[in-house]
Amino acid sequence: MDCHGAAGNAPIDPTYPKLGGQYHDYLAHSLQMYRDGDRENALMSAQAKELTDQQISDLAAYFSSQPTHLRDLHGLD
Image 1 (cartoon, rainbow, N blue to C red):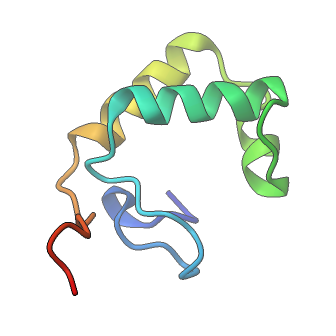
Image 2 (image 1 turned 90 degrees about the horizontal axis):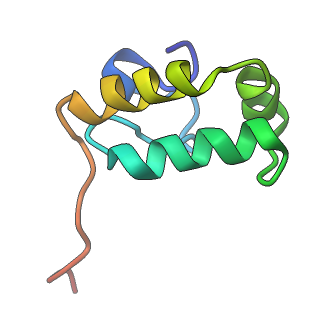
Image 3 (image 1 turned 180 degrees about the vertical axis):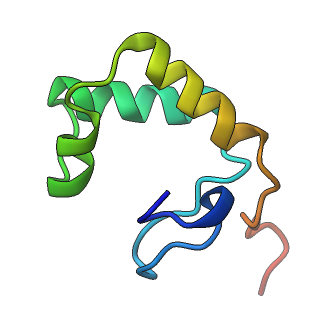
C-alpha cells in the first residue's frame, strides 16, 4: 500500500504500476515470481520473499477487486 497507494491506484512514483483492477492471475503470478526469485526488483523481491501462497492469493484478490484506473490503449491515435 505504501508504494502503490490507496486501492493500488495512486503509486508514489510514476514508474510504479497501478494494481487496482488488475487481473487476479497476473498479480498472483507476479508475486510468486518475485518471491521465488524468477522476477527481480529490489523492493518487490524483498516484500514478497516471505509471502505464503495464501497471502499471495489474498493480495491478488484484494487488488483485483479494487476499482481500476488502468486504461486500454485500443483506439488511441
